[in-house]
Amino acid sequence: MPGDRIHPRPQLARGDWLDLSGPWGFAFDDEDVGVDAGWFQGSDCFDRTITVPFPPESQLSGIADPGHHPVVWYHRSITLDSAGESGRVLLHFGAVDHSATVWLDGELVGRHEGGHTPFCCDITAAVGRHEGDTHAVVVRAEDRPTDLSQPRGKQDWRPEPHGIWYHRTTGIWQPVWIEIVPKDHVADLHWTVDVPGARVGLEALLSRTPDRPLTLRVVLRLGGELVAEHTARVTDSQVRIDIALPPLRNRREAAQVMWSPRSPTLVEAEVSLDGADGAPDRVGSYFGVRTVGVADGRFELNGRALYVRSVLAQGYWPESHLAAPSGDALRREVELIKDLGFNAVRVHQKVEDPRFLYWCDRLGLMVWGEMANAFSFGAQAVQRLTREWLEVVDRDRSHPCIVTWVPMNESWGVDDMATEPAQRAFATALFHLTKAVDPTRPVLSNDGWEHAESDIWTIHDYSARGSRLRSRYGTREQVESMLREGRPSRRRVVLDGAVERGQPIMLTEFGGVRFDPQGQAEEGWGYSTVQTADDFGARLGELFNAVLDSPTLVGFCYTQLTDTAQERNGLLTEAREPKIPIERIRAIVRRRAVSMTHDSPRDVDVAQRT
View 1: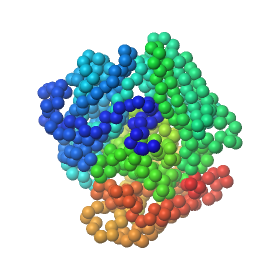
View 2: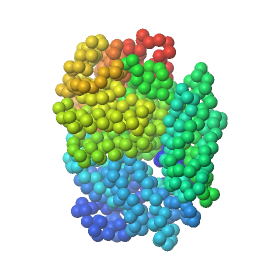
View 3: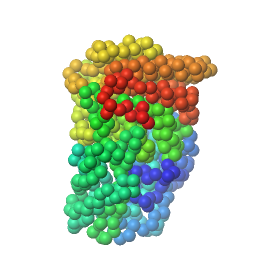
View 4: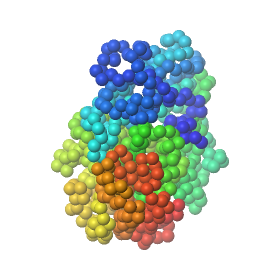
């Protein structure tokens, strides 16, 4: 299936939807006069054309202006078929950075704040009040480059990228689409699998409380075969039902239906709601059957210890920035990561497009779901990040590929967490709030160091040589000393008061080797540099072997997948070309880990059997 025709919301997909990607009218509003001047009422002010969903800073947008433009406007004429007497017209946005205001034919239809999460505008009433089948959609997006309380990830606040920060992504950067649905329709879906109970829980949010009882019907198929069918009487807008999964009742055969990187089995779902007006709403969905957790110092998938072999991905393209250049590019990204030998990816400081998660689900790649952090601390930053993070978890918690939640990275936005109780309280609160919304996955309070409360102790260490890594992680005593006293980045790894529960220990950023065959270090940087392909492969082997030889580390995340902007420390170039043969990298990545060699036969390192 072509990646560009994957529904923008793959776990709540309708067959009929109108893709609004393509040319839109566009205007900068540097003086912020557009609202007072009534730009939402007409099209005369839109003096440029932009290709949506690419941000105006990027080449693929057709604008290619990376300067500071805090307010931008979009205009698009659309032609709509009739929604019928009781139908609803929904205008969806995958993500608009950072806040958006939407009008239809000059009438306000929606607002949203949060640059990485979706929102929907019900434009039915506005369509009905304006004659004709052609309508004007206008969007005002505001993204203040120097507002450090906005969750922004690696978007630079300076005019030009510096250090590890990149060009900004302003405005629309994920798909925009329209669906015509019945008045009574499914607005949201979530799946929670109970493997011991041999069942799956479905949470469905309806568009409204129905006027009379409705019927919700769920059909589940595995490999095309019917495995379950359930019908429920619905009287409220929130529906919770449990559906038996017969394939899980025989625990000796249940492994055949479990999701894993080696066998990414998915259960396909059809959900239909029979509305009061007789018009049914039908959506397609899916889920994976798997468990994830931590126990006895190990990370476990489906009850078995698994060594996490992850790579850090910025999810950034030179021609389109945070927006993927195409849906097919998202699939190719997943395929490349697996080809390199990794079983997991940490998408860094970015909430990735749901279509990327779709391919991780389909192709079998675990994901550490991470929030894009703010850079300042205060009431507004706390409110913004908390609200948006909850939207992220709610959007993605049904994806089987996501195995860990990471709301914070390296104390970004809480730089004084070790000494300021309020900042530590915020990190701890995010940990517990995430567990309250989704108790099924491990959560980190702060990846890299200064852990207040985490299910996994993770460390970032960019030592340039394997000997240095061996001196820190070569024995259990050395690792325990690092947790208590070590400061790989001049910060403590575990803060006083953090609860010791036998957490797994992983090195979740290391490497960062720059391959510079021309010897032009000023044109890019890494944490260390080599100049020949043989030296690059040897350095990778040296670093990976030091990590894999640790008897205590049970996972890693190598920095990084691709060169990105001024960072030249990728395994691949920005064009996604390998710097040395993929087969050589894969052999380095997949070497068996010492910490797994003394396990019982049932504790299988999945990466070794892929």
